[in-house]
Each structure stands twice: as structure tokens, then as C-alpha cells.
Image (cartoon, rainbow, N blue to C red; front, side):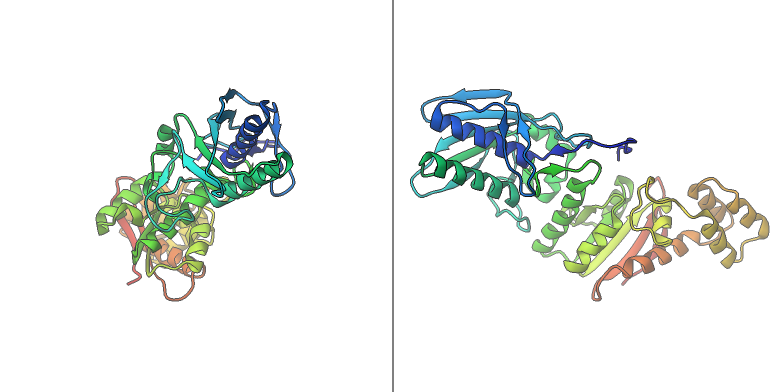
Length: 362
């Protein structure tokens, strides 16, 4: 995860807001023959951003407009992407029909808020676009029956850096955004993918999912249980957000998997495991070693350690089950975030993917 820079951060605009702006410009051009540039839209919470058009095209029956996605200071995978919209007149009475253009994915699995077979354009951007079309149609005396094709050139390549493939969204990116605003380092896209991953797993009828803090632990737990890709949740540092969503949307068996340092943070009550928001409590690890009867010299070495990894190595060298203890304590913290009826286990893997700590849940 990219480190957050210091100072006040600039906000940006979601792909949904960009698509809405391009739709408004293209539809107005289709009706009036002129592209408003820059184009201004109203967002759900009252903001009125303006967008410069980087592409314009007008024929008798269609108009094309494009803007560049500006995510502000957020490390968004789509920052700088071209969001292109083509509008064409639709059949009478059909309203707004959405079509996936180049680089926009299509939903192929149940569980997402968009039906299977539909373009991966989320409900909030769809509603924003429909509202803008309806407003323009009223002002211009038009029926507002449109085919709206949204494209993100290069989006299929960008989508490989997202969770779309795992969620069953094929062919490109999703058009996202609830408020239209990108809040820097809110990690909303990551949290969104965690929630949708749980939704897809539930809709697929799975009774066991594994949420991992990183790729090594994810591969290890997948091999351990032979889990399908749809059962894997890329939790990253957001263990609290994952558990709270599972509390409202339960799955029978849940495995939390991660490295020793991350899960040592969870064991001491931290639900956000990012290094800028939580640290490993080294004195606590030393105290837990003492509870296991560690020699005083080993405890002193643990207290003077500079990392969780050093303390773990001391425990391993001394034959002490510190990793199991951390897994057990992490499980207790995690269970406090879950509703009853969910069986939970915690697994700790080393950097080579070997299982070194376990707190069983079934």
C-alpha cells in the first residue's frame, strides 16, 4: 500500500462522476450541436465539479465526449485514465440503456449489485447519469431515450491490478463511486472489493472463505484447503472492515490468514493493521513469552527487539509456541467483531508460506 504523503491532500473524482460528465456533454451536443466545455455536473452531496473535454465527436445520430479521470492525491489505479462516453438515440420508451465499451467489464457472477450480463457500472453512477439525462431531456423537450456506452481505453489492462477478475467482472474495469468524490487514502475501492468479494462468495453458496493480509498467506491458505478463487478475500490491512461486514453478511466458516507481525497487531486489539495506524506491541510479546516460561535472558532479548520478526525468531529458537498464542489472542479479538454462528480460525504463516501458528475454530 502506498504511503500517505504529509500535508493537506487534494480530492478527486470517481470514474462514475467522470462518466456522468462525459454523458452530459455528449447528450447536450447531440441535441444542440454544441459541446459545453468545460462541463459541470452536480454531485449527490452538492459539489459541482467541472471537467475539461479531451475528446469530442458528433455525427447525425451519436455524440462522443471524453474526460480524464483525476483522482486527486489518491493512488487510484484509474488516475489519468480516459473516460469516454458515446450516446445514441434509443428506441422510444426504453429510457437509458447502459452498454460496456472498450475497457469496461461485464458481470458474470451473481452477488454483485448489478445483474449477471450487465456492464459493471455501479448503481450510484447509473442513477447519477439517469438523473442528468432526465434533467436535460426536460429542458430540451426530448424523450431521453438513450444508449450510453462507457469506455475506458486500456481498462482491461488496468483491471488486472484490481479484484475484478476474482469478482467475476471480465473484460475491464468497473465504473464506481457513491458520492462522486475520491477521498485520498480512504481506500474505498479496496474496501468496496472486500465487501463485493464476500457478496459473491455468499451468492455462490460457499460456506468457507479465507481473508488474508497478503499474497503469501493467501496462496498458503488456498493450498491448505483447496479453496476456489471466489473464496479468497484480499483483506489487506482492513481486518476490522472485513469482520464488520461479515457480521452483517455471515458465512459459516471464516479463516483469517496473515503474517506474524500483522496478526500480532490484531492480537493486541488493532483492527487496522497498516503501519501508519498501528504498531506491534513488543512488550506484550515479551510478556506472553514470560507466560510460557521463557528464560529471563530470552525475555530481556525480546524486550530489546526492534521487530516482531526478531521476537518470533527468539520464540522459535526457544521452542515456545508464541505464534499459536498470537493466533489464539487474535481470534479472540476478531470474534468480538462477529455475530454468533460464524466459526472462525486464525492461521499465521511465515514468509515462505509455512504454517507456524494456528487457533482452530472447528
